[in-house]
Figure 1 (tube, rainbow, N blue to C red):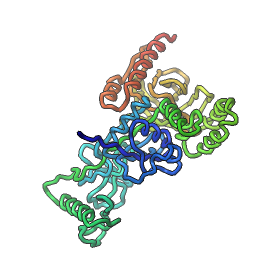
Figure 2: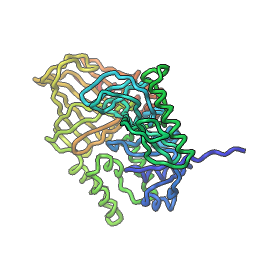
Figure 3: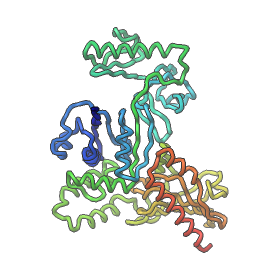
Figure 4: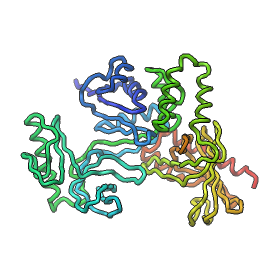
Length: 440
């Protein structure tokens, strides 16, 4: 007979109620939850056992970060339940310790080689010893690292300070953050001494990982995934339609959500109508306002497109005009990009694509570029979506699908789900037919 260990998790942030209920129903064991979550789950999650997996919000609330030795298992469960989720997986990365190799010094730090990836160390100094991974920056596609390496075993924890201090049995430059039993202290001290030896050893090349970390997974939720999360949350507490969409736009919308859920039972028959009107008037950008466009790629590389000004905004469509401020060539359209050109982008908020039409200064059309993506999400200051790689282009009278190979690579590497893959292909094929049927 053998026993299967139940994976323990803890979760915090705007998705915590929905995810805790989902994972509890799927056989995972919550621990160290907030008092509010424990109450909503009927007493589950009140235990103080250390979790195997920690789940927390991403910095812009577009999804969650899952960390731990069983992080991939938990992440896969969430993806299977929600469908429209982009998954970026870094095995054994979080907390990993490296003997780094310097690639380039930049204004606010140093770019490091960390085996098959690059890291960013924010520092003004020149000395680089051991570094530890603390996260991942999608905006620059690099691991974030710190020189303040921490080692933990049980209840004991020590930190590498880089200063000339002595705190035996730790090596020089280390200090205790927390002592525990003699055995746990000895384990931490032994590992710290091992790391110092590896740092100075000529047999270990620069750029090598000297202590593996925990699995790190980023899950970026599309609009449809957020709607399913609303349904999960509603199983344990009153939840309005659009709860997670609104909360993910930023903390300034939390008061709106809190108020709507507080009065939900009193005006249920008109709540959706009131909310739709509030979102259109108070959440979506208005004509003349400037918005940023966040192009979130499933492979962990986010791009901020040039900002533009809203020409039109209603509950279904937002139209943005963006001036072209640099020379070059339009990707896919195969036409010269000139200063003074402009782009008109029409975001249909319930569709899996948006279309940008490029024009010369005199209004002559250059071409059209249809970007396949999850349904766009809009706030007062930004529009964002998950890019699905494949696109459709109309230029010089020809319509074609481009970057299909990137979509195939994304499904092969597990960045996107089969649901997202099929929607991307179906949408691209539909747009090819529609653009071909347009009159010139």
